[in-house]
Image (cartoon, rainbow, N blue to C red; front, side, top):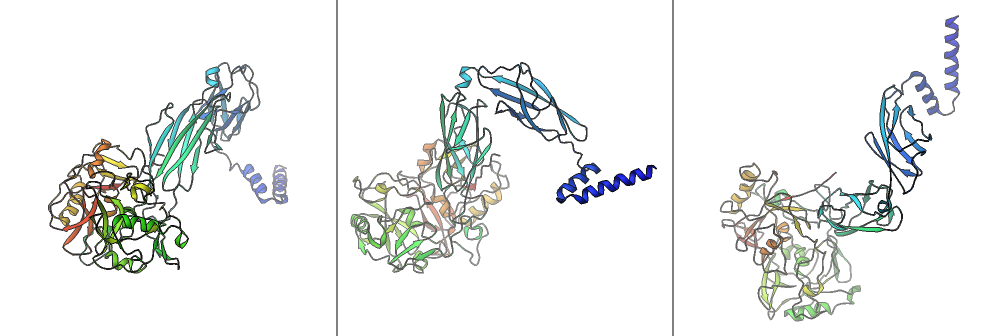
Length: 557
């Protein structure tokens, strides 16, 4: 008889499963029968009283309610992932003292939660302060304080990729939490639940403004916190490549930096060419404006405004024109592949003046890609550029050559991405992080060994192995030309402007090696002239200094 009953029950169960039109329902039923869903889950996932969500932290649940709310009979709505909870959801409780709730899992194990309720006073109802402000990438500067409302978050890396493209995307996240749980909050106008991570996508290079607005529980007070998220400028590859006999520590071998687009230049078919990497548009004929003295060069370039469909033609500043240099070959050879009429041993004006001497201006020597400093009455080639790059920084020059608004030179236009304030910060004594570039520098020049190759090898063999202080990192290197150039400030006399930060201790008389060899001579390498703040050439046997650098990526959670 017992066997008959068992068979009958089994048949009924099988019929019930087969009769279900939804396979998932059938599976769930079978799972329940076979007890395959027995788990140890016993978490309270949400706890709400009078529409106000409590904060759950471990086994502690804290609820905050408005002023004058009676606590002797409150009815919480509770969600959990266990089999049962006691007391049950929807049961009124006296919260004059903490109440213990027990969640039982399907495997019979239990977890106790302590729930407390706080009733706000008048001051609490009017409180609109933050208690927490965290960013995922970069460093919040200054450190968070509820009374501090403005911050810089930097540097956010240009890209999280080890080999980023010129058009790489970047994002960041922020977590903000008011002091009062039932205060409300928006981030950039979007309502955000307190203490929840908020994603900010498609960051532009340079400053991105984030506004966090906290409104008190009684709606009488609003505090607005601002965070300037600064996405580091892209430091593009120099273009240097492999050659026979290359040292593996040279820039041509390591090829650090942001990749160039391919193709890089677009011929617009109207006498102009656009550099896809920087977004700048150039006259295709580099000699179209011919030879000019400096003031005439500035005015002639400016006079093109309205031509070729562009309204903002100007003589290029030093950052704009040096963005065209390819450190793998002479600039006139490289540029003639896309533009016209560059010749060997010729000079092109920039609009950036040399402030150490009156009537002096930087010019590009087109055959070797280094810069000269020339008098304004000299006659050099004028060229013109249109647009403002979304990834090249300002030069630092803020004073026009003739102090006339609208003159059209670098100090007048101040084209480029705004620098962060503060520009630098330090987490480790002896090192400095550049908020604009995401590069970490040793704070003073190091004398390694005489000669370029010995210096390259000295940093790798001594600093990265810890023989000399490496500040906890083993990936220091000699900067390439584009990396060291980011330290230039053409509104200051020399590299000692860095010391104004209180973090650097550099000297103007100590010229700095780069990791780039010269394209003009196999016996020369490129170095950074700390007075001119520009890259020049010198013999590889020269006795120079080094300023070690590495990439700093700050990820907080």
